[in-house]
Length: 428
Figure (cartoon, rainbow, N blue to C red):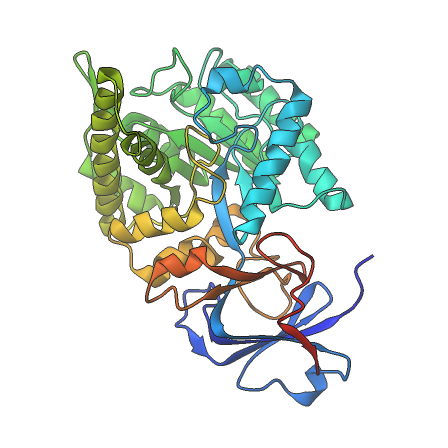
């Protein structure tokens, strides 16, 4: 049982996640699991009982707990091929997911949206967290990502075809208890799938969006080519993952930005998760090797080009007015579950102002994935998911890696997972 403890948190700055400028000398009062008030300088006496705990973080910046809007918790993020990872049993995949969610929490990422896992593994882990049997980031889950027969991530069990078939699959996911619907609108890294053309027909995608909305679920679609982006826009989906512009140029697969599609996406208002981290981590891992084989060098060259293409496309879409939220694709290839600071840095590198990039991983992310009534900003009435980082991330985003304290639902954690920070806590 969680005791109704009052905590008073003092820091040098507060970035509240709303997109508003930072506030100096903030005081945040947490009562039990929720934020009771946010003040500057001093908290009114009526908010600070005699037995309140004081958490003094004078050299730190407070932020909402970070939110990664695109992860795959079943996958280890260590370079294990997808087809090998899913040979494990559902029990192992649940344990893998628990490890990833704890890694994220220890990095100050207090909420994760899982965008595809096998069977009911992520739904079960979400329930285990709710029961308090283990600890990790808050989970927003889609269950199985819905895909065509043999499509991207078909190993997860989400295959469906035809208008009636896809409607039935949406209903199955809702019956499973998912928070939202995820659709693979093109192929991807799954062997044998095609990334440069849509997977579902227009009628199928329209039916997916209609059925999701009819059952009060948001729907997001993985799109790696311009035509799939247009299908998703026309279907009226709530979000697009990746929004890449892959094309087949003879035998060569490359990327070619299509300005009119970028403008159409911007005008639609549909937000996008960029997942720039995947290419960045592949480049890092290959570059770290002392000696590369010919094939590895070719892979490194290809991924370096892909990273620059992704950043250029991000810049073009952002300049066109597309809304972005932060998401890493953690679990996929070499992308770890503490990667969100890297994603935010890459968004900044792609031309996004620093404060906007932080907001994309906090308040805006919460709004887009539908949890802004619970988390995402530091304001009265919300759950007390708050982190403290050393220094000022507006001056240097590397501060997001220097997590001093984590609160999740009012509980105070250290980055290593300890339940309190004795050296920082005193009695009022």
